[in-house]
Image (tube, rainbow, N blue to C red; front, side):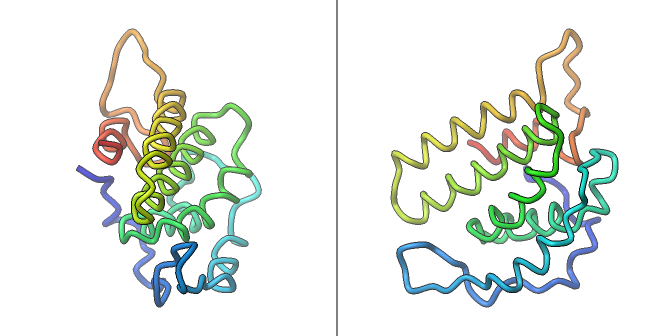
Length: 152
């Protein structure tokens, strides 16, 4: 089960012409990604995630296996999130998960497994255990259950 992004109005944005995989002859569309990244809000507010174009576009990229590109547009979102906030832990985990998937494409299983564990650690801070577990609890539109389905 992946996060439901059908309500995210990013379909007007194009995907890059090709996926960039470092170490191959693929070319990253840096100018396009910069145009998206520069729209990162100065301060990340969890309840305003739907207006956060780079965050939403990162999901579109990730779900279409543009892992290097997702990392690039999520990084400014991570940097704009408050230190030690659930939003920052979530986005940091997403960045590491995208990196893990990229390592998977590159055939580097050791790095993939290491990065996946790091991503899960960040997700555990985004969704800390409580006395009343609630699978409906969300951070920036994502539940811990949805993240778990991406990290298996």
